[in-house]
Length: 298
Image (cartoon, rainbow, N blue to C red; front, side):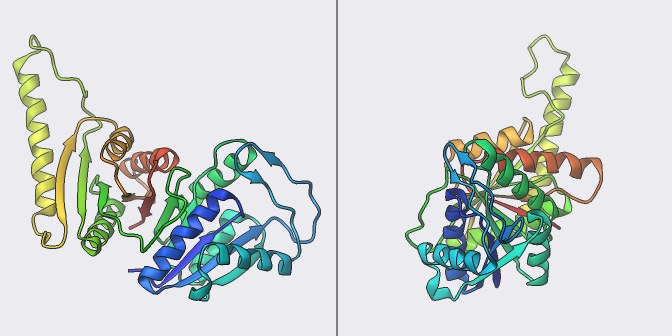
């Protein structure tokens, strides 16, 4: 599935964890790995900003200094044997990450999400969210709660894939099923009915309202089943779930309760109220998920 993986790092613990995942992916898929650091400027002395949990924002240095530091990060992540390519760029992080990914024809970006506090959280979180919204290739975001090391190839046995039938969500479903089949795992496909009250109507509520509610639920189940009816289940179990809840709340709750290994979902689309709403759900999930999240554009 992946031939060229790019992992932007800022030398924090959060990005080191993401590089570990990128290394495992590159090893599994025998893919080229590029490790990128974007500095605001080279050769400018700026005092480091202390952060409570995530270390310090590094001193900017020369391009050669940063390349050397990237190589050390590659070695620490166990990616030396992959001949990973170090790359240092100067400028605005979001723009250069997306631009470099496109220029290198990367088909997967792997990034850490925001840290646990302070300036670092604001910086990395903002960059990651903007990349998720604008990158044309899939983006795997790795949260601080994800395991810091991967003892072997990354295999996602339990995958949650929310679906709203938008183009990006349907593309995400393709990725989820491919990953599930490679792992001989299970993909839980979730359809959330956001427009309905999650509370069951009281007994005294009009019968027609209760009947209408049940009809909407059944129609949602039929649509979901129809979407998945032609999918082979030999190498991957598929679970179909219709829930009544805000989508991002249901995704996060179900992922945590079922100890999911991965969430695969559509990224924000290019227009339309449905895509805008789904993009908002994606943002909530990327921010709060405790497992990695793979976001996919149509």
